[in-house]
Image (cartoon, rainbow, N blue to C red):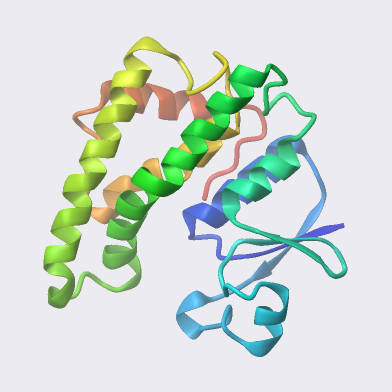
Length: 198
């Protein structure tokens, strides 16, 4: 049985949990508290030298880090990952963009507010993250004004990747009120079979 090392309140970890539930694959969840530096212990660093979660243990001694790499691995051969080369590449395009332009802003704003308690010394950083988070959401909104999902005309791991932090963006002070297409898409993701909340 596969094992996931993660924090259920982390969007990157939640992505993996959501896909596993939707694929109905058996797994064991091992809770890791990053604030207690449990991902920085010598034992954990032997599994993942970068000291990050989520981490998928495929079998004893075989580990795969990085949330979107894990999604791609788990979805291979399923309906969550298109077989058409261009549609497949579009899924990857959105997943790369999520880690480069979306997650560093939307997730970081949430981390400052939810995990750090919104301390005054992070006020300027939070302001920048919220502003850049809105730029990312504006791009998503424009896409979703034309398309129901992000790639291949159907629900894929690109949607799971982007849903994870978008649906909790308001926890970081990023309002979703200006984005009706995103809110419609969030409802469509929640309506998927075997959906589980964070």
